Image 1 (cartoon, one colour):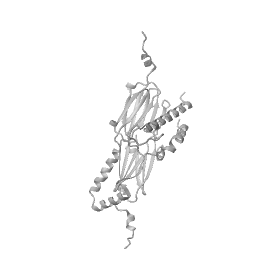
Image 2 (cartoon, chains in turn purple, brown):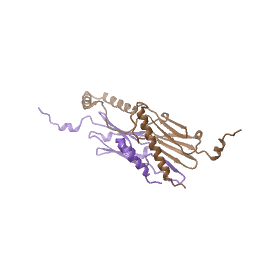
Image 3 (tube, chains in turn cyan, orange):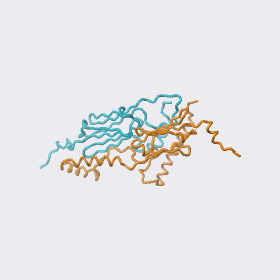
Image 4 (cartoon, chains in turn blue, green):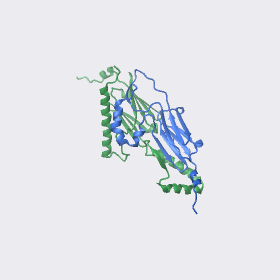
Length: 137
Length: 180
């Protein structure tokens, strides 16, 4: 039985949307929960991606956007196996984060440990916009 | 008949809703200095899979060490707990950023002060904070009789897998107590 459980949807409608706030967005099965922390000289993105291998995770920085994609093989359908509960995110997960204009994509690094992906993007100290400001004498 | 009975699903829904209200009640009573829980914000996402030999529970616990994860079977339910100190990862990240700043010229220090002025007194600015960084726990009722003593558990890439072998009907007979 691969179809979405209608009761899950009712549950979501009843229980989650009004109370959960931002969390409701994070509950989407095709996304991942992330933290994005900006420090003076770097942007640190941490994403919960439990149960992946390193080579199943793809991280790309392009056009001021960081895209995290993780994909694993679909679980084999076995008639002898029956899901009593199925809450975990499955198969493919994608998440996009806007990067500041000062981000140095080429120097970004990523690591994966205990099911958590950490991407560190260095930021240039000087905002390029500052060069356009005209001082008033 | 492997097809799922819709009434099971209603029962399951009610059970889950009940648990969520329990969680809400727990917050009202003040169980600890935790972030308030929202009904529906699950602590731990689990799959429970049944086959002929066993009931397997798979739980997502990203960011935990194996040492931080505790599994217990009691009252026909599996209780999974992940403990960690609050916001450890942020502290580490903050320390790293601080170290980097230390090596830079004075101009950076001035920049940092400027940033601090419009970002309150914190040098880090969070664009998003969705990940749960506190201790978590989840109680999962196991609907089948299982051999808790023969259970096995593994933890890999933030995923806990617990296999609970089913108890065969023969074993059940062995547990009856004779009346003398």
